[in-house]
Image (cartoon, rainbow, N blue to C red; front, side, top):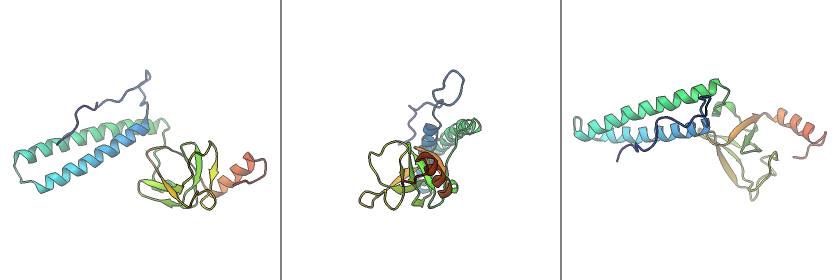
Length: 170
């Protein structure tokens, strides 16, 4: 039990020194925060002053350092234009660009958006919550993996009108 030290503290970087993949940094931070919660729960249950308590305290220090490191890299990427999406950016009825396709947001969750389920759709397709679902199912789109844009309903209507040459084919 403990931290997997095989992971590096330093991400791969291109020649310019910029973080290559901020999405990977987001996922790494989420993973480290999950590990920190697990270690804190274990620490709260163990006997004060024991060897195991000291080991867990050391793990917490290391986890805090790693989370701080990745947070700094992510903050630098944000300063250079990367957008970190959060629940505050979306409302039910908005549209989210998720892995190249626009979907209507059916529900806003703490870590993801609920969108219509539609396997194997092409790029730049727009799926609304009413007719886009195959079998009425839904899917979740994690903020940290694949969300690359947002449009309000009015913006989407204008986008569709311009794209379709005046015809709205939702």
